[in-house]
Image 1 (cartoon, rainbow, N blue to C red):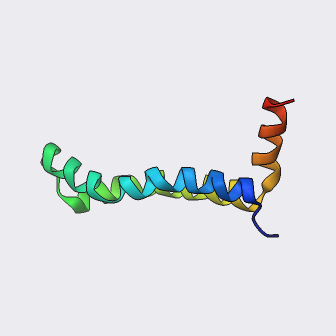
Image 2: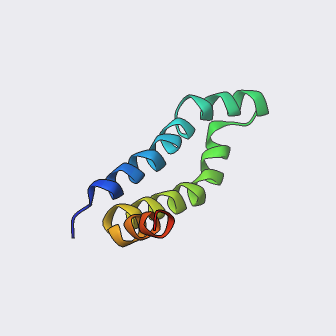
Length: 74
């Protein structure tokens, strides 16, 4: 199974916030909350895994993204 064009577009939209979360915002949150990076990363692992699972489902199962599109624009 490959990814479809709409599925790849949805995947890009979902991937962008995750990259920002793991980028500059993560360091800013650690500084503001005065928490070590190690402590916050261990708490974020379940969240990141759920986001990656959703990303894989939407990318490799085009029925999800295309079915939702067809349902909305019927």
